[in-house]
Every structure is written in C-alpha cells, then in structure tokens.
Image (cartoon, rainbow, N blue to C red; front, side):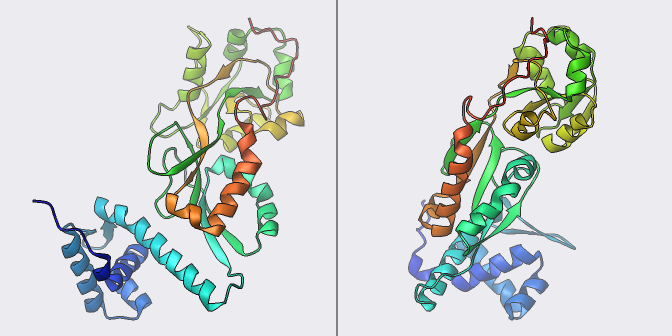
Length: 323
C-alpha cells in the first residue's frame, strides 16, 4: 500500500531546523545550544521527523553521530530550502537593497589553484554582493551535497543536475625544457624509458592509471609505466616536473601558462583521452537564484571556450621524433 503524500501545509519546519542543526554540529548537545532550545526538545523534533519519514536519519553511536543514507539525501534539500527562505526574507526586509550573499563553491584542487583562484577577484569586483566559500575536496565524480555550485572532474553521467561541459580533458606528456633537450631525437617509447615517470592519483583507479592509459592508447606495448612517484594532485606533479625531475601526463589546459612561458614543454603530439572532463554542476533550483546564476555565467564565460582544441597548448618542437 502506497504511503500518503506529505502535505506542505503540515511540513515540520521546527523539526527540519533541528535536523539541520544536529547534522551541522554532529551533536544533539551542541545543536541544542546553538538553537537555544533544550536537548530533550531537540531530540523530540528529530524523532518526530524520523517517524514522519519512516526511516532513521542518524546513526547514534556511543560517542558520535553519523547521517544515514536517508539523512544524507535530506540534508542538502533542507539547507538549500532554508537558505532560499533566508535570502528572500532579507531581500524583502531590505526593500530590494543589495544583500551580501555567500556562495559555497566546490572546485578540484588543481583547477582552483591553476585557474580559478588567480581570477576569482575579477568575479568579486563585478559582483560585490557575493562572497565565495571555496571548497576543494580530493576526488572525482558528483559534487558534495551542501554546495551551491561545483566544478567537478568526472566522466559524463546522467543525473537530475544541470551540467555544463567546460572542456574535455586531453592530456599530453610535459616536462622541463632541459629534459626535452637532453633526450632530443628519441622516439616516444625511448623517451619514456629514459626518464622518471610522474603519476597523478585518481580516485577509484589504479595508482598508475594515466600513464597506463597513455601507453595503451598510443600502442606503447612493452614500455614499463608502473614506476616513479605518485602525487595526489596535478599541481604537485607539475611542481615536481618544474624542478627538472621526471615527465608527467597532464592536462595542458591546466598548465597552459607554464607551457606558454616555456617553463614546461610538450615534446610530443601524442595525447591521452580517457573520457574525463571538467563540468560545471548546478542544482536546477539554483538557476533562479541570482547569485548562482551570476557565478555560473561567469565560469562558463571564462572557461567554457576551452573545449576541443581551443585553449590547448601546442607541442614544443625540439626535433624530437614521434615515430
């Protein structure tokens, strides 16, 4: 028998506020103090919400609380809804005067360091009423649940989120110019064999994923790519290469400035295309939010032209054979 739909006339707003507080503080005691209510009242609100949904929202452990899968699903919706109400009420109270808004923005560490952080001030100058809380978790795949907008490094996927492709990643070998000059004239396989390899770790993939895929796509059978140092981010790998050590397979869009200045070079045209890309992810409800819409338009304008071959750094020709 189907459960009766929840009528919005009876939405338990106090219980939802209590749930949000406990999830945020990770403690009934801390949440009760923050909300200025008794711990027993707070507990009753959460229990009432669990009875309404028919599922447990928290795993109650001896010294900690953790959201269940249902709680993780509910929390982002609660946070977004209260945020929208808060901003709308502030707009009305201030009679249309600009209200300072804080956006929680998620970006991969290398994207943030290389591209976004140096120019975020441009967005702040154009949209002075919007502050940015920047979050840079390690990993691939969908965004965290409590962010307003996110740039993610991921393969294409189908979801109910609004997804804008910024660019499809094409990776190539990059290295210090001295290394390219030292090994001038070697073919691709010999060049790889002669140098230390630099790896970038990617979540849920083997630790030598990018080099292994590069070798497979470029028919480099018999070339050992399971050696060398492994770094958590592309930025760290690039810093190691900039010191004059090793060769890395990196996204040339991320490091176009280093290549343009000649600090790194791209000695071969061979590329790796393993399906990853940088995507801008927005919740459908956020499209009506002025601050989110402004940031989304700015990101697309600044980075959306890098798709395909646009923005990609050309190979540096140092008389290195690619045969």
